[in-house]
Image 1 (cartoon, rainbow, N blue to C red):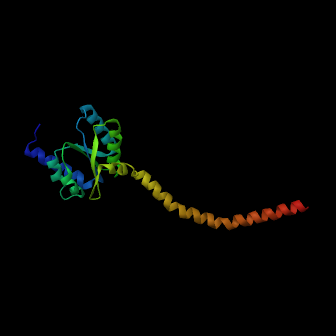
Image 2: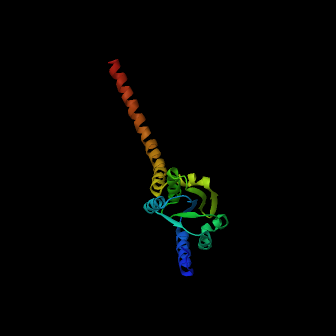
Image 3: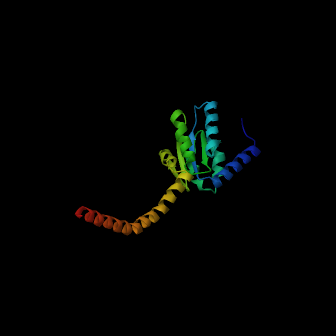
Length: 176
């Protein structure tokens, strides 16, 4: 069904708004997927904080102008769906990677993050990025490690004195 001019403007505005705040983008070919498969993909996208849209490439080109995703404009061809990560950078990559395992028709074509476009193979790298919770946990571990080492270092002389006193006591008991 063809869109009228007003509907096209709404799609461009919606995509531009999403692109302004998105962390990453994965564009994938979906030709051959059934409606139920696409519905399942959309459901999973909503659950993981990914904005998923099937749109004409010309509308997407207009929508990404002036955003970090302007780098993809020349690479758009064929029927594509666009997955924008809205909560954490790796969410779109994980969604497309996991869904493509069971659906061979879904093929990642490009990845964009931080104003750079990468080939489809980078979906693996994007998917392996830690979630927000994982990143915070890693940061806390890094921050706590020096404190733990300091406490151990400060406690070690007292532990050594205790071991020496125990060794002297054991020697005196053995001699007596």
